[in-house]
Length: 400
Image (cartoon, rainbow, N blue to C red; front, side):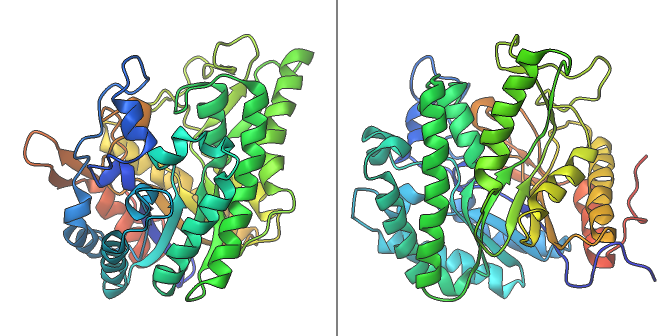
């Protein structure tokens, strides 16, 4: 039987602490959600209460055929005040990672996924004079305490989005719109990856370490317009080149969702999708070919590639299955072309708190009934994805 994916390919799904745990009161996002006039439509609150329900959630994902899982650690729980580390939080995460191991779910552990401790945000966040030193200290403590349970470690999640949305678009904390600071934070986040890499290599165990990069299919909306092309080239340099050129690590995490058409005339610097293009609940164009291009770009570093996020927000689960089929097809294409792709992690395992979009977008393979005690609802897409994970073949996925 011909397989589209090798026997040892990692199939799983992803989450992030603030989006699923609930009650992360000590970070900058919790503060942002409770700041009048911020972009957050609702507070995260209990999220999906995974801080308490992780064991049953992981058991469910394992039963659905997945063999890997990506999650993040909440820095503000581990270091609630500068230099004050919580053994209770580290012990909790050790139990979490133990549970993944017991279920044969290969762990991908993200050290920074969008949230900062409030104390660091009050000092200036990533622009604080000691930000990199503080981040490295936190990573060292995590590596010493948990490194032996982390087969894969993701240093920073989507540094480009942290910089773009936080410092240029102003839609994420700290809510700034300053091109100079945007470029400065980009440099800081490149440093943050290097700092985390040092900490992981000096700590317990031997995690495979990499950064998780958002690599959209960037193109100028009007290729004949010099201003449009110039902005495209500037964004390409900050979003791709600054992070991929000279990248060190053991793998590259590729995160891909859509094509982004650069347009300086648009208020957000990005033009709407072409008329008639299929869109997700997020308003993002469905453009599967861009995933292949992102994988190719990441592979240009010479490092193995893992797709650490790719997914769709939709109320139509048949559309989710079709999305999975088309995007996994691009991963299979890259494998046929000889690219060293090790795994694919769908975003997301569960419906969750989607940052400035709140709880409206539904990305999950597993739905959450927020009116019925956060009841988990397994969608057909979860079974379809599990079938690919079990067989290594796309053929069995229903796409109608």
